Image (cartoon, rainbow, N blue to C red; front, top):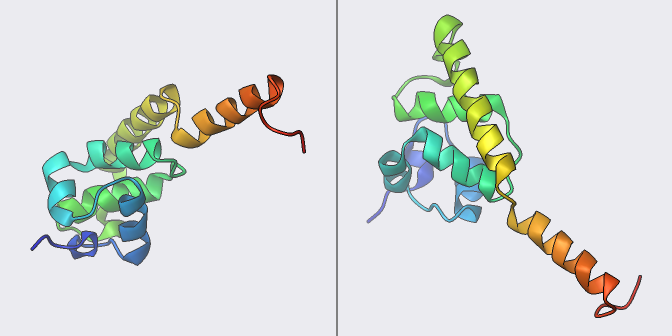
Length: 114
């Protein structure tokens, strides 16, 4: 049986729900993907980027307390986080796509104007 996301240290029910919305349902999946790929999936699923959430995940996968990240290590993680944020911004999310589609439908008269 797959281990729940909350088996990863520092992650709880809110993280479990966010990962489920991104199509990730187990700690095993996150461990196999790695922190960066898993966090990118969260962002691509519409989660708002949050640096603390990212480094909590990284620390948890290393079996470390969330507040163990400091100094140069934290600075390096911030740089990785910024890259992930930029990658996610470059790929449209489903919500943005749906807004664009609805706008197009409104323009051509397929949806009654509100």
